[in-house]
Length: 199
Image (tube, rainbow, N blue to C red; front, side):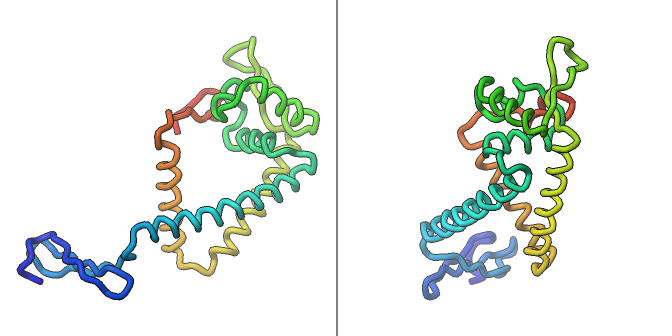
C-alpha cells in the first residue's frame, strides 16, 4: 500500500461496504474508513430518518401549541414564536420573513390579540407605524413551554456523550443552512430592534 501516491485512497470491498484506506503525505497508511457500498442507500437512510424526525417534531409542536392556548392555529403559533425569538417587530417585516401576504399576517395578528397573547406598541423610529410584541401573558406562556421543551431534550440526550450532542448540533446547523440557501433567495430575519438582519 505504501507504493500508492501520497494522499490517495485505496478502495477495497468487504461484504456490503467499501473499505477506503487513506494515506498521509509520506505515503503511509493513515486511517481506514468504512462506507456503505451503495450511495443511494445512504441518501435513502437520511431521507427516512429526516421524515421520522419531522413527523415527531410536528407532533411535539402541535402539543406545545395546545399548551399555549387550545384555540391556537399552527400559522398563528408560528407568528407567536417569531415574536418570541425576534422581539417587537413590524407586521410588514414579519410578513416578509414568513413569506406571506400582509393580509395573512393581519388575520393572525387579530386572533393573537383577541387571545391576549400579543399587543401593538408605538414604533420609536416611525410614529406612523407600530410594532407587534408579546404581552406579559404571552411571554409567560411561551417561557413555560420553552423550559419544558428544553428539559425534554436534556432528558432525551442526557444518555449521550457530550461530544455526540455537540456533533449533532453542528450537523443539524449545517443541514439547516444548506436547506435555507439551496436555490432560494436569502430572507432577512426580523431583528429585536424592529429592523431586519440577514440569517
